[in-house]
Image 1 (cartoon, rainbow, N blue to C red):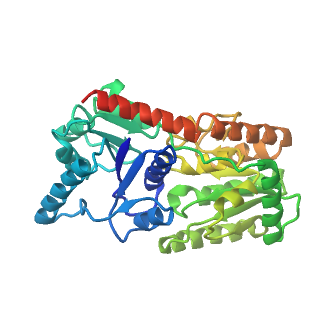
Image 2 (cartoon, rainbow, N blue to C red; image 1 turned 180 degrees about the vertical axis):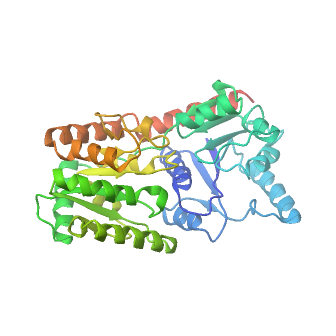
Image 3 (cartoon, rainbow, N blue to C red; image 1 turned 45 degrees about the vertical axis):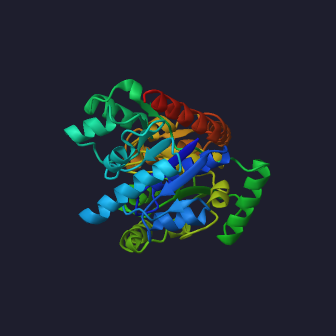
Length: 379
């Protein structure tokens, strides 16, 4: 199958990563994939680093009428020349352009993937774009699927939930985890018996770093060996929030229990060294990429029930869901996992099982191809 993926996302975020994972999975299965994005962005740079076929020649993001008209013409020529069968669009802004370019072309369907936290506007154009003008819609979580079906009136049979896929676990994972743990503990100058809580991702208020620090103050009273390891992306915009988190750590007397790693290019190995992965996000989390990465590393997740996390993390099976978004509830959840080694081992096995089963690349590919087939059958 020949698939054109439209990912005009400026930053490298969960939505961009979903498009990249889709391209990688399809390519690995022998399908022909081409990625459209805008030049000079973090997304374009990252896609190129991954070795994916990136095309930045079509300025579909422009607001200049003439350039947009020429881009639309060139897009239609591309669809015809390359005999594209599926156009998978990731942003609302470019979707009407792809629908126009594909109009009337036989053997071609447009599929929309939605993984954005912004509410869908309930106007006629969106009803058409997500409805009968679109071959099918993929939602990255059930909460988004319900929004489209119940809020926008899209026919249920046109919307499928396909979660972000977990990566493949490395061979001999127990040995890999043991080696990674020993290396990280040595790097951080920590005693081998310390228990590591990992928080991986962008440092921003909505990501819950401050709430986690408040919870940690309670956790260390019950589990004195607990240490929070923070892996940040290192974006310039993170500085103010990182300073605020650092001040809070100092105020709570938690400096011995917190380590900042900053940006890392070996995140899968860092994750393998952890005992628990924490996701205390206060908003968004509709792709749950970090949760999938923790699962692939065999690490149970302790999370707030934000966005799709309540769907992805199975309580007392692959992780532990806090009762609410408070420091107290998060502290109770972390203590329940860290304080019970047998439970922790069982949840780690459950997390790895989810990566190999429910969220495997094989299931991701199968579900996606089924959606593509239905979209093509609708004409």
